[in-house]
Length: 427
Image (cartoon, rainbow, N blue to C red; front, side, top):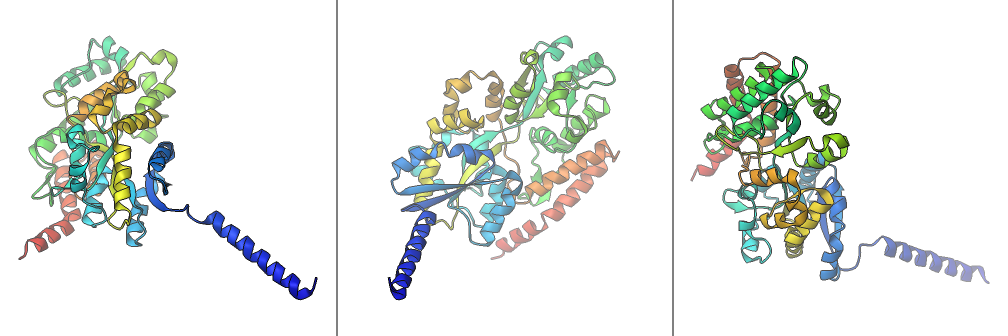
């Protein structure tokens, strides 16, 4: 073989290898639909997608899982870099921010024409989290709300056959449980590094948390004062320990040991309590709606929604994926795989959910769930709420002073919003 012929053959072999390598790394033929998810949901939802791809020949759904701690920043970075996916799982409280940025599509027209997504089948407060200034920007995927996990045996020992339904009943139950347990035991655990328990009490009031088109804090209102007073009362009476989650071994062990009888938390803890509590504890706990001032109370409307991004070139396919994941059978299947509660009422007819006694209280409270203020700045304000409560409980700051300062901080956070509202009102 001549050296020239050998060189030609080697060049051909290299070109062939390069072609094969490119074929191995290229995207699947057809259309690739990019779907970003948060945490474990991405791993689990992949089990549902082959059915969607079979119904859409040539379409491949590429799922990217994002850690919860990085999800918000990654979505904002992708928006700035024009690198958003077609569709994504977005926390309900993030919807106002991405709507304000113009990043997400309005979906009301698609919902109106849909035979799958029916607004009247969704819990109203959950659906409302996706409506900003009368426009729909997302479809609820799964839901949560925080309510009371409680020790049935400790409540019975204190003389109560049923969980409390209002604040007065709750006061009596907590006082009796504290007396029964003594100095080193408590009635309720309200972690001071969480704003959610106080927020739940505040949402039960008629006064809004923000006023004047959500441009000023409204935390000195009678409603929020009432919520804070009840919250503080639980600590002042020794019913709640002035502690954060990091100051105890873990909530499941301490709940089992009787350090506290009531704990406000979400549906993910149904599975955790089943796994982490011993066998002899499994018949000694249950769930109940969060007591309200005058009867069963509301809670925050939480969970995640599916949003389609304005930059997507595959909006129709993205909507069809949204419909697919929103169908009642897939809502039920997703619950079986994850324990995430369905956003649709009819999905709760599934025997797996209908027979789950611990979920029944969530089903009841979801009918009364309320959205948090729909402003992009809400998460910053919520963190300030937690700091304010900590200053009152552990810092000894008078509630009146703390609320005045909290309103002032909130007004500063909302300064840009007020400026934009003024600008938009100028003819």
